[in-house]
Structures are given as structure tokens and as C-alpha cells.
Amino acid sequence: MATLLKILKNKYWLTTAMFLVFFCFIDSYNLIRQLQLKSAVSQLEKENQSYREKINDLDRKLADLRENKEKVARERYFYKDRDEDLIIIENE
Image 1 (tube, rainbow, N blue to C red):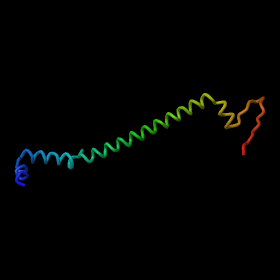
Image 2 (image 1 turned 180 degrees about the vertical axis):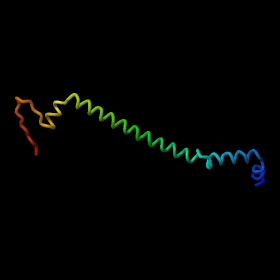
Image 3 (image 1 turned 90 degrees about the vertical axis):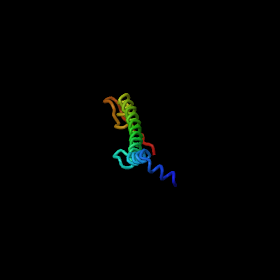
Image 4 (image 1 turned 135 degrees about the vertical axis):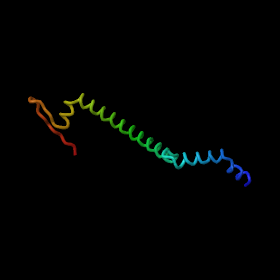
């Protein structure tokens, strides 16, 4: 108890303790705020990665559609040339 009282009377220890309390809890960029910001950044990076994967997937699909325009038009929209007959077979 005497050593604790002796430490509290020392102005350097007291200044250091006040400095730590200020920067950990009182300052606008305190420790708690920094942890919240780090968590938010991590979450945003995960979302960013997810969106990048979706964009890459859509780019691959778009490239496939551009390469196979006629095939897609024939399969989905029953496109045919003038001199062709179209026969539709439906599966049950």
C-alpha cells in the first residue's frame, strides 16, 4: 500500500497514467473508437471482395453471351432464319 501511495505521489507516474487514460478513453480517436473503425474496415473489405467476385462472375457470363449470341437467341427466344423450320420439344 505504501508503494502504491508512493507511485501515485510521483508526478511522472501520475502524468503517464493521466496520459494513458486520456488517449484510451477520452480522446476523439480513443482505443474503443479505433477498434470499432478497424472492425468496420474489415467488414467493408469483405463486402468489397464479395462484390469483386460477383463482378468477375458477371463479366464471364457477359463474355459468354457475346461469344454465343446466336446460340442464346435460338435457345431462349426461339430465333430462326427465314429458310428454317422451328420445332419445339418440351420436356415434362
